[in-house]
Image 1 (cartoon, rainbow, N blue to C red):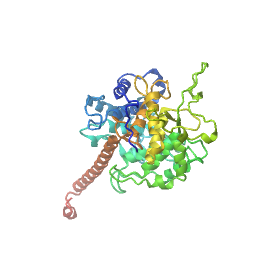
Image 2 (cartoon, rainbow, N blue to C red; image 1 turned 120 degrees about the vertical axis):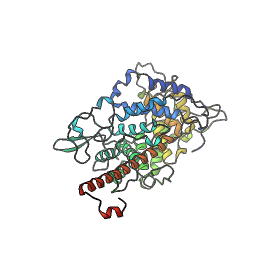
Image 3 (cartoon, rainbow, N blue to C red; image 1 turned 45 degrees about the vertical axis):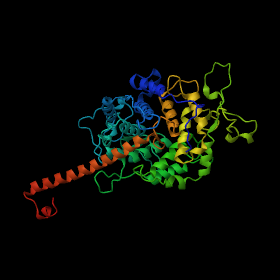
Image 4 (tube, one colour; image 1 turned 135 degrees about the vertical axis):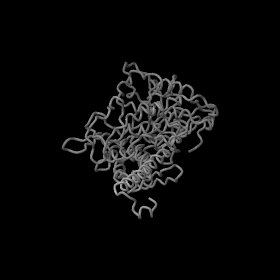
Length: 483
């Protein structure tokens, strides 16, 4: 990707102001508008802590030479980790909110295969998005002196078994799992590309290189079935949707591209990433690139209106050419004379929709994963985010003039980070977290796998000693092998 360092004429990201906004979100109760998100507390925590992590890269990063006191004090991190772990469900996965977490009932019926308590014992149900957010939060909140212990307390085996049960016969994934008396397992949630992406992310985060027969091995999900389901969802115009017969959407395109990338991703970032499935299996790659590039447009101020209606979605803010043949971004973003400000470039999620902060992320990150970031006008998109979407109190809004919120505030920052914005942490486009958080995940996963192997060895020794005690003596063959 080209160097996107802004010059003197470009707007500047006020990191201190944005940190004040996120400090307020972190330390004070959120406004009453978030009451409808009570069932998504884990997501709210992810948006807030991920944003703080992006805004506070290590002191060694350029343009951040001094180390200020951390916004999240070290003594608070164990408390936050304990809060996250308290949402882990006995049957695998994490619940989305504290109000769905109930203590294990004494004598509760155990699920035969895994030994975990059945989901029908209480309303505390695990949720697929919450599970990914919880794992990423644990990595972001890891003790800097013990990053390998970030997943301490995570039931890796149970979560992977739960994940496998969320996959349908057609390869897709649902959101929640419930055992229905007399009818087996019921997979709840629609046929949503987001769940496919999250499933691929959780799998990469926890699976590791455990071989069949080793302690901690779990049967894998049907990766080929998942890839087939995603690939079948490409639409006639190159985009991705819930199915090939539905309207494509930029968020779904990102999820499809990221999921395919993660299915081929090595366990560590140090290993070359061929992305074979991503680059060789997509039926219409030129159409996909064209569709993604077409999501950007020159932003226009909405026309004045005398109407009392405040529905922003009805106000056109993209350039409409006089002739259909002029409908091309290249004819509207040609640089003017030297010193002329670059145009503002917004992105939408679907054709003929207005600009929205988060779509700069969904489109930009998708192109970044495909190594075609040059297809997006990064300079114009950056100006649009900083001049129209950044709020005066910090954070980003959904549309110009709107209030900031944690969802769009987070994805405004991820969009700038994937552009290489100075002062922000380097971002992993496929996982939407800083690259250093991904390294923590890698170390924590390896430690979790090794801990399982050591526990397996310990169990074997205990069984040997029990056998020796029952026999009344050590057999010669045991001494011969050093047991």
